[in-house]
Amino acid sequence: FGENLPKTRSGKIMRRLLRSIAKGEAITQDISTLENPAILEQLAQRN
Picture 1: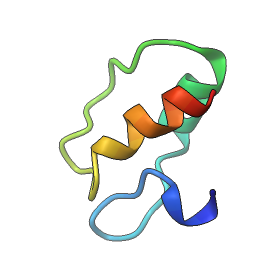
Picture 2 (picture 1 turned 60 degrees about the horizontal axis):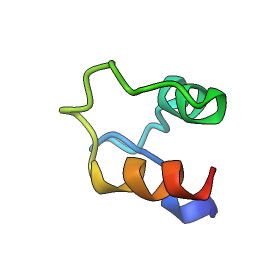
Picture 3 (picture 1 turned 90 degrees about the vertical axis):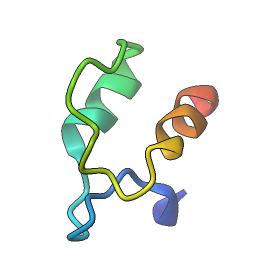
């Protein structure tokens, strides 16, 4: 799980996206800076 976190291209973990996924909320924030946007779908399925 640790290597599959939503990170920016500079390597920062996007905690606000993790919070939204954990709460079951829809992602409405800007995800254009994500290194791998597909990870959000994978995390949402695990939740």
